[in-house]
Amino acid sequence: MKKRLKMKDKTIKDVAKKAGVSISTVSRVLNGYGNVNKETNELVRKAVEEVGYSPNAIARSLRSRSTKTIGLIVNNILNPIYSLMAQAIEDTAREYGYQLLLCNSGANSEYEKVYLDGLYEKKVDGIIIAPTGQNKEKINSFIKSGIPVIQVDRVIEGLVADAVVTNNRSAAYEMVSRIIENGYKKIALIVGVQTITTGMERMTGYFSALAENNINANSEYIKVGHFDENTGFDAMNELLSLPNPPEAVFVCNNLMAKGAMMAVRENNISIPSQLSFCMFDDPDWAAMNVPSITAVKQPTYEIGTKAAKLLINRVNNQNKEQKPVHEVIDSKIIIRDSM
Image (tube, rainbow, N blue to C red):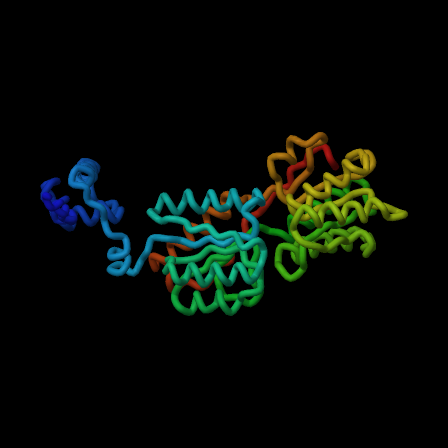
């Protein structure tokens, strides 16, 4: 019986010989450096295919101390805000030669902790996170160890880390002010938990608009829960069952708004003749709904893009000495038929 010959693993030296270039030139092409002309780049990549060379990613990462991977932890990937943000981050990461590892915490701090530990073990170059707010020390340990962390959507108070967010407070203030300008005074709020900045800042904007217009806040009109459909559905049913129900409602994220809209329909409430309905976030269904929904449109894709670029700059030490960046990108109000 003939012995099967073992194929010798091809090396970067074989690629260089096939392409007729130096080993350093092959290395520059494979590592994505831009100082190689187009013709040489194509020649090397053709040689890689013909020779059958497969670079050892683990060995390369040990030499460069980089795995070319980024970790992303979001709260709910089914939330259009996070899925679009993840797309932006992945698009940008790919452009710079990085791969994205996506983790979905489900707004559960224990899951988030497990993912943080897992990303550390995988030696990711950096992490982008929409934090639950419960793992401050764990995230801080990443930063102290030299792994950059970028917060998106919300931030942890007191954590010295970069962040890219929208103007939650002022956007909520502007939306409620618009509702008041339309003649409404009995304005309800459905908002998420106050232990995270998105919930806290949007509620603050609501109170600021009422106070500036000399409208007393009614505690019965303020419903605080989770940023999910069940909270929106239950909160809206409670509001509609009040002896003196609100004339308008501001729902503080798209998932809660979806649940709230289901309750509105089940109660046969007409919008806007019986209830003015406005929301934070602007998913596709807001424009397609009948009537179309007035919304705060977040610059979600831009947030993801800026966060990814900021992280990659940190990884590459291009701004190592720079103090943490807290970038706020303005949202805008989209006026539609529901007000």
